[in-house]
Image 1 (cartoon, one colour):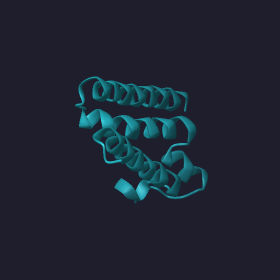
Image 2: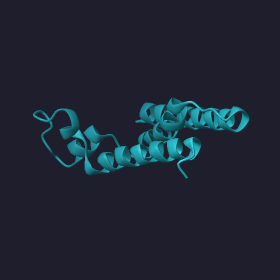
Image 3: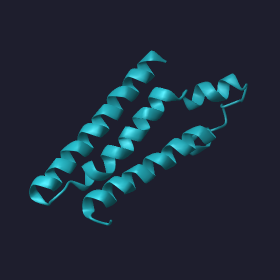
Image 4: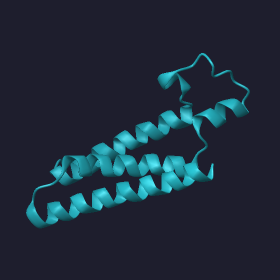
Length: 102
C-alpha cells in the first residue's frame, strides 16, 4: 500500500512537471508538446488516484468478490473507471488549453 502511494505521488508530480514544462514552452515560443499537454494532466490525475484510492484488486477482495475470471477492464471498479474518465478529461482540457481551443 505504501509503495502504491509513493508511486502515485511520483506519477502525479511527474505529470504536473510535464504540464508545467509544456505550459512554459507554449508561453515562451508559441509551440507546445502535445504529449506534455495531454499526458501531464492525465498522469497527474492517475497519480492522485493511486495516492488516494485503494487498488482495484484490494477493493474487490474486501467485498469478497471472485476475481479469478475477470481480466482487463473487467477488473476495474466503478471508482477506477471514474479515475480513468477524469484523467482523460484532464488530458483533453490540458491539450485544449495549450493548443488554443478556448
